[in-house]
Each structure stands twice: as structure tokens, then as C-alpha cells.
Image (cartoon, rainbow over all chains, first blue to last red; front, top):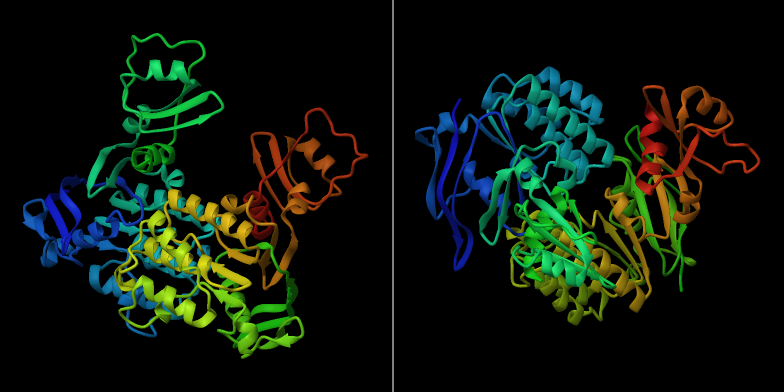
Length: 287
Length: 287
């Protein structure tokens, strides 16, 4: 199976640097999370990888061929589309048909089952669908299309909690049945923590993390206790974010802790979840 | 201060009933939550109240005048807009200017402060903004416009966790400084639980709840224990949703519990939050 290789990718708009010299790989049969604050450039990155936007510098290869305007390579990549890309008066069923025309072997049986489970009418015009139902129609297309790399940009936009759960379940089910690569870009980070294997955290135009989720979480901690003791205990650590309430200070770090250091009785060390680690790594830095 | 009165409102598209004979009031200076699953008709309802869509039957009055095509009444109502309503090449600053032209006394000082806090460029073209930054521009307009009833349809669409928190804080701040009515329609229900005073739950074309949040939560319970005991204890209650794991059954109810009934030792009764109560009241019913 092929690997997608992104090499020294830079994107500028005028004087603004959006993406600064990104080099990374997207492996086959893996579920990735692309995380970043609003405006970090996540959608721009996904659009460039999928040949919908062009880089200022750098290249994207699928194994040894460039992806740019390469029909065979692009046949293996699918990006959940803006519905505005579809002809006016398109129906949900037209999205499925177009995905079949473009990629072949669209899984119509699964699509029919999912439209029923999600409660969307295949005959409905896209222009009449609410935000949530539009997302659902796009998601079903993305889960049933025949491609090796599926990019989901904000897959839960406008979805209610029940539909979000259903999507996560169906994603895992189809992934187990036919392993392929999914890249999820989302702001509901706590909901995908158990779904994604590897995360990229985009901040200030670069990946500040490119790491397996388990490795990241193994080293993500909240350390709390009396301010003075916390300051002493963490003096050799990089504090990403902190809060103080009365005299109790909590600091957040994402790095291995020395096993030799004695932990004072009044200091409490707890693991934090992916959303909290993300916030510490990104927002914390601004304070 | 005026009250908005919705009277026997019905909306049909062809043979489909979307809203069925809704009668309710929107009071001054209150924060409401409009909750419903995808496709429940929330946006349709907000559009009708704001004269962007017409009802099949029924009327909306602001005190004693109809709102329909009534310029003076509509001046008091603001609905967070689709950006597609703005002229092509509009900038963020044009949104503010248009809100000032339409409603007068736009709070430019607050808008400038918020564009800085949220990190959005007032000179940016709307068409170049990401989903999240588009939502932010619309939100800032809605928080700074001079109207008595502000309707926010999916105010956190595409917002990262930090920006969502900032929005909730700024909403409370402006509400305290200048009380007015906000109606929030959102799927991130757990995040607005402490923000909204009153909820409407739209399901199967009608309000299944029209109630103060505190009253609803006071009667929202998870009851769990050995299946047989739970069945006995809840035999006179309306079970909305249930799960069984091994022999432990959990049922969800939203109704007052009799104070006289003895609770067996093995039965655990806990309050549930707004998201769980909503799921029980809506999804549960379908199972």
C-alpha cells in the first residue's frame, strides 16, 4: 500500500505565512486527527493535499509520483466536499452517483443503510437540507466512497449528539471491514480521543506535535498542590498552562517526568485527556 | 418591555409537517435554549419568527402588533445570518456596518475588542474565512447589534474549545451589562446547561418540553440497580430510555419521583445533566 509524503510544504497568501515548511507522512490504514485552533490552516492543508489549492512551495507524493494533477494518484484521495461544489438542484442520491462516477465501486448498499440510520432522505435536494443533514449526506458519501485516503474536514459540523455517536461507530465499523486511512479534522477533540491513533497539532504554521495519541497522553499531566511546592517540583519542566485557585496551583505539562524525583505528599499528579493537552499546548502558550 | 407571542404556528412543505401548531412566548431579558435533533425544524422555526420564511398557519406578535413585514417590530429582532446573505466581497467590517445601518447604535467598541480577542481580522473578506472564523464574525455581529431579541442559530459551529468558552463568557458579560433576550439553538447541550434559563425541546414537530432548565433537571433521573428491583421500583414511571449491562439496569426518567416510596438499598438514583435528559426524551423514544 502506498504512503502519502508531504515534503517541505509552505503556503503563503501575500505576506501571510499559513503553512511553514511542513514535512510529514500519511501512512496507509491508519486513523489520524488533525488538530488546530480556528484559523490555524487545517482546511488549507487538506485542500492542498487534495489538489484543490496549490502550495507556494513543496511537494506531495504518493509513493514516487507527484499528486499534483495526477489523475491516478488523486483517484486514491477523497476530501469531504463543500456542497457548493455540486450542481444546483443536486439531490443526496446525486452525491452518491458522482462519487461512483469518479472513484468506481461506490458502496451503495452501505449508503442506503446509512441514509436510513441517519434519517436523511436520498431524494432531498442539498439546498433544502439543514446544516446537520448536509453534513450527514457528505459523511455518508465519504464513508462509502472507494478511496484509500479519506479526509474528513469537520465531520461533525452541526450534528446532534446521537448522530455524532452513530458516525463514530460507523467509522470504526467500516474501518475494520476495509482498512484504509482516515484523517479527521475536528474541534470536538474529547470525542475522538479513542478513535484516532495519531495526531498532528498545527499551531503557528507548523506541527508542534506529530505523535501517536498514546505516546502523547502517556506524558500529559496536571500537577497540583500548594503553589510553592508545585513551583519547586516543576522547576525543571516546561509549564504549558497554569491556574491558581486560593493557594492551590495546577500546572500542565506534556513531557516525560523523571522517575527518580521524589513526589512530595501534597503534590497530586494526574493524567489529562487529549482536549486538555491540546489546550495546554496551544492556548496556554498565548497567556 | 415587549413579549414575542407565537400563536398556533404550523409549517408544512407539501405533505410534510415541519412544525405543528406551536404556541409559546419569548419573554424579554431571558436566555433560552432551542433544542432538537438534526432535522427537527429548529432553523425553520427561527427563520419564520424572523420573517425570513412564512408560516402555513399561525401568527407571531410583538405585544399587540404582528411581526410579519412590520418594520418597527422586526427592528427589535436579529437572527445570526447566513453569510451568503451578504454582498460578494464583503469584509467582516461590512457586517458590522450593515448591522449599524439596519438597527442603529451598533456597539463598535465592543466589536473591535472582540475581533481582537477572537483573533479575526476586520478587513478579511468573508469568502476567505474558514467555517470557524465565519461563525466568529457572525457571533460578534450578533453580540454587538442593537436589538432586544437575538437569535443564535448554531452559534458554535466550527469553533474550537477555547473560542467556545470565550463566546459563553462574552455572552454572559453583555447580557449582564444590557439585559435582552437570547435564543441559542445548539447541539453542544452540555456546554450551555449553565447558560440558559429556559429550554424548548422540539421533537416530532412539537415542543415536548417548554420549561425552565432548573425545573427540568430537578426531575431528571437515572435509576440503576439489579434489573428486577429497577423494574419493580419504576413500574409506575414513564421509562424514556434504558440500558442493561450484565444484570445492572439503568433507566432514565424525567418526572417527579414520589417521596413516599421506599428506595431499596440496591437501587441508586442520580440526577442527570441536560444532554442526557435531552437524549432520553428524544432518541430514547425511538428505540
